[in-house]
Image 1 (tube, rainbow, N blue to C red):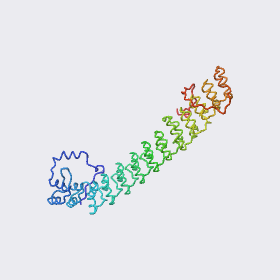
Image 2 (cartoon, rainbow, N blue to C red):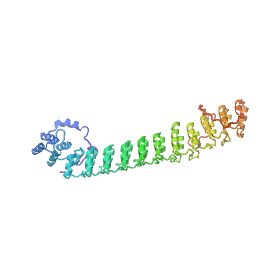
Image 3 (cartoon, helix red, strand yellow):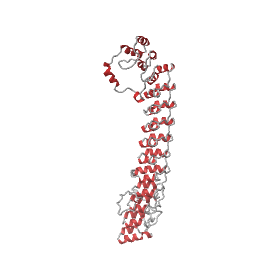
Image 4 (cartoon, one colour):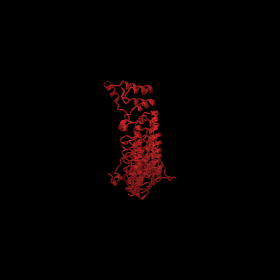
Length: 488
């Protein structure tokens, strides 16, 4: 059998151009057809060996084409007619693109393929460029034909012109069945494409969980990276594919890896508001006490994140703390504990989330205030009530030598004074005396009445937290975290 002409690339070889049928129909009237060839094609299709032999003896052109542009051998192969195919081959018929064995396999004509194997044809045939013909068969996508060649020794890791193993082109067509077949015959699950990305990267980018699972089950690296050095776990997080994230974690992907910016995958997921994925990452071993590239704890970054609303912050904080994040964590710059950051932010629910973890409340804000005096300074009444309900020291003196009661009296705030007295504020403390003199000087008998000695009970009352509207600050608040940190 003479050697076939140079084959085209798998992409061009997969199917005829869409317009070819129309072109053949348009030009059919201009082509001269040999009646014997058309008859020979019909006989080859039917498997009529007697008529094929007769036509060959009448010098019918075994390499001619009928009105559809098909050769007799192609017709015999298409319908898997072993007898007529054998007669045509003996008469010198040729397959014009692929050798007959590979052409037969590519269309699933396995009887002819078997006949050719039995007659000595090799499954290791290559084109003049050195590319195995098996690559072209795989590109055609006929599962039975590919399986037949593999079972007869075809090279499962054959490479195309781009030096990619055949499994690469199969994965990139999302063909799960052929991928599974190639892997079962020893294909490399860590094969790389022309730009150096492993095929698992493609499956993750496409969001094909089933395909990714098959590759991982056959040894693909769950920590593989894309060409831009993103782990495939981070790629799955970016796409919001919680199922893919779960699969990768189950298969051993590290939840502690950083992206190219030095941000943990957990922090990135929080920033993207992928809370279902956040939960999976935490369950998969993400470091809930981890820090960013500047060593700032994740919990504090959540508290200060301007793009998360209060409910989102509380949801994430609860997940982090329930899985081991310390509510007592401190920031790297000023050593302020998380509760100070929460009190500074205008979010009582965030404060309550930390208070529910029994955090230490005997701490100072950056300018020396206690949690209570700071909250009074900035008129956050709900935060004041939450702190009191948690049992903070109502008489604690801050770094500016002030008590909560002193501030309430100087503001002439009846409701706040009453609340503080309910929780055990001591009007006789020396720090409060100037404020007591002040309310007497301005004639506020209602406030003076609140300060009269009360019958001592078992303990201070714990009224329900009122949800009053927060008042605008009556004076400029003390320096904030951002101001002192030089962030504004």
